[in-house]
Length: 293
Length: 241
Image 1: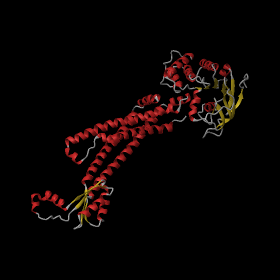
Image 2 (image 1 turned 60 degrees about the horizontal axis):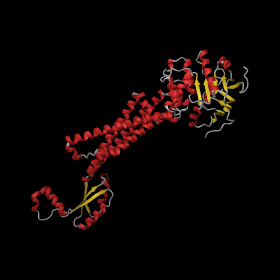
Image 3 (image 1 turned 180 degrees about the vertical axis):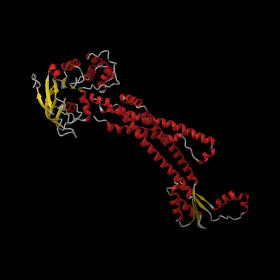
Image 4 (image 1 turned 60 degrees about the vertical axis):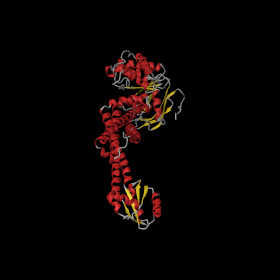
């Protein structure tokens, strides 16, 4: 193990530019993936908050009793995609309307003009399923009208999907480039040490003794890249969030910025897992190809 | 699976009907139905013209290549069935010397010599001490820090021999060890090989230099077109054919 790590470190310096390029690529790959992931996580939290604000309102046929509406409430509340259902009585509806649009003039009305406007206001856990819910509600026997904001739901949902694909695409492309560069670095190392490897084989070196340093070299490139990306994302994302909060406070009302600690709980193990994985795979392929006893 | 020797414990090398053909080569095999037994403590010369199969024999004995057919036993290992992990263990019991020395040019003489023990997992201090002792025996004291290219051919071959002797090999294989040397240097190397033989190693030297064979003596095997055409035999006094 000591031999493998020592020779691995020596190999990093021996391969010079190859090592540097591989290291930078792993760092850039993880850095960009980390930034995209951070944006995605923030967007997810923003969508989650928006989902609470996007409501579906159900109005019922005139003459329906409050008891019957509450029965419907229970039925709707049982649905998986529904977060909460609030019953708004005709009186509450008129009070809200009066306060918002009529002010003091509302007192001039003796009767409630919205007498048949008792409704259920539904917030959802998953706004992408709003269409299914609306279809279900429209089929209920006493339902007169369903108000929904399908456009907002679609826009919010598709923004998340686009970013997820962008993250996956970027991550995959950069992973392949990283893999190729680590592969090239290790291959160059093997080619440079071909004579030494041959001699060591004749002297009775085991596969582990010969291959170990190359695995250590790949692993060190992956882990160093992961560490560098970790610090870059932490510093950059932290400072960006701080800048946005100070300079554009209105943004914090629109967007949710998750604390970095919460993001790192997912991103941290992902970074180090990726660093180890890409480093080991990048070494395994050339070692398997080039080294034969 | 560690294979058992087919003969007694004194058998170091045994070839039974060994044929070796190279893929893509001409149809004439490099070795053809070779049978040979070498016992512990023998000093054997293998001679023959270029293309007679001498180098193929060495490569088979080090398990660099596998025979096309037949059976080879080396130091108790069946070379046709030996596992990859066992090849390294077998080679640690062998010392191998090549015509082109195969020293690492970017390492000192001491580091080159130490490498033989370090690959077995031995510590640096132990390897260094052993390497210094052997280099002294080879007459290379004071040259430990020199790089191979700063040395004469004879000195480089002595260093290669020192490296081969580091793990006290039971079998010493030398492939044209004097091929690049003048006669004086060649005889120095042969003296050192003889010394290793006296110390208990079985020695097999491939050479085309009959003058050296004459001077050193020992068992002589001659190959021609992949066949053994002469074998003075292990216990007999050799008569040149």
